[in-house]
Structure formats: structure tokens, C-alpha cells
Image (cartoon, rainbow, N blue to C red; front, side, top):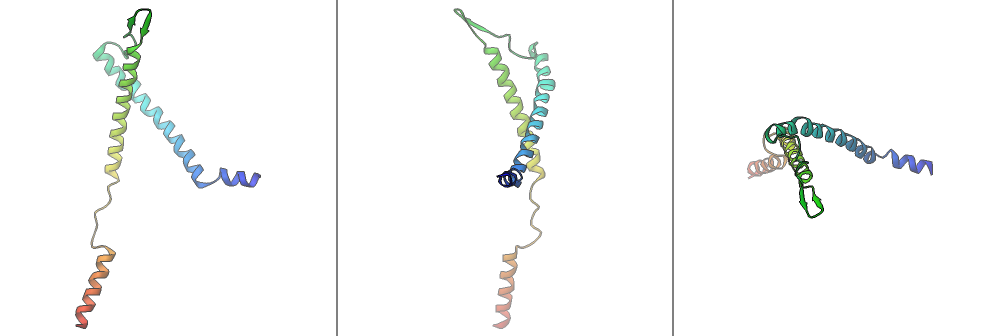
Length: 120
């Protein structure tokens, strides 16, 4: 039973997933700090507060916390924008190199045609 557990726990895929999860959590903290510590103070300069939590609609005896929703919406949009820019930058860096010449198939076709023309 221990051997089966060891084989399961040390599989390459499981280790890769664990490393990816740890990096994603660290990256999430980085993006969250960017939004909360850099972007929301800019919102505070414009709006006067670092969030919209003070906006409350009261209907009868019920308080509707529309400001909390707006704060989360702004956070989401900022995080999505940051991630979009990062993914776009990474995809630009990973552009495949342009082909230096003909493909292997094209070369083999040229050789075949050349050999046909020599024999004819």
C-alpha cells in the first residue's frame, strides 16, 4: 500500500500541478497587491475613498450594499486587465521563430523532382 501511495504522490503530473498551484497562489497575491495597493489608491484620488463600500441603498428596513458589489466589480476589472496585459506580453515573447527555409517535406519533394528530371 505504501508503494502505491509513493507512486501516486511522486508522479510527475502531480508534482507539476502542485508547483503550478503554488506559483498561481503567489501570483494571485502579487496581482491583488497591485490592485489594492497601487490601483485602488488612484481610485481614491478620483472618487475620494479607496472603495465604494459606503454606497448603501436602503429600501424599507433592508440595506442593499451596492457599494460592496461595485468595489468587487472594479477589483475584478482591474485584475482582468492586468492579467490580460501579462498574457499578451508573454504571448508576444513566445512568438514562434519564422521559418528559416523550406520544410522537410518541401525539401524531399524538391529532391524527388530533381531526381525525376535527371533520369528523364
